[in-house]
Length: 190
Image (cartoon, rainbow, N blue to C red):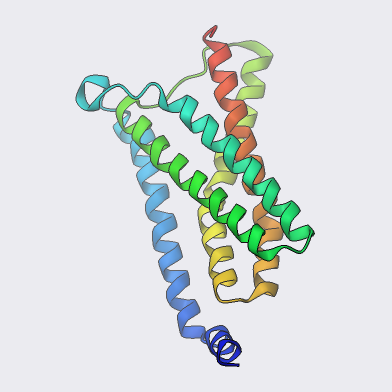
């Protein structure tokens, strides 16, 4: 009974929600500002300054693929009613995406932006995929943190409402991250 009372009191605490949403806004904004600074202003320090991290795009593609697979497995688990397995897969997807973000920031801090080398229709396709990927990726951190917050507080109705929006976006961002990697590689003839 104490568990239910504790969960009910957590759910009924609007001050905790406000604190979380402020934290979420600060973390999400800081991540976007850091990424913007790295890509638009700093443009990389060069491989000599911090080491050669050219292997990271392949690692990042693998982490995106892993996140997509874990998201799919988590979706299947919750459809089958296995909340415990769902939780494990979703924490794994979050960890893969968080590690991706760290590796992505490290790579771009050292090497700057990677330009698409191709031309014509494939360049247009690449830019369209990249634009949607980048725009939608800005929503993943705040939505994922919100979904985890509601799940932690056992507010599953609110959790479901957020994840109905989050899951397809996060899946799209993860899958297109892999696609972007391969489009970039093929534009350089690799």
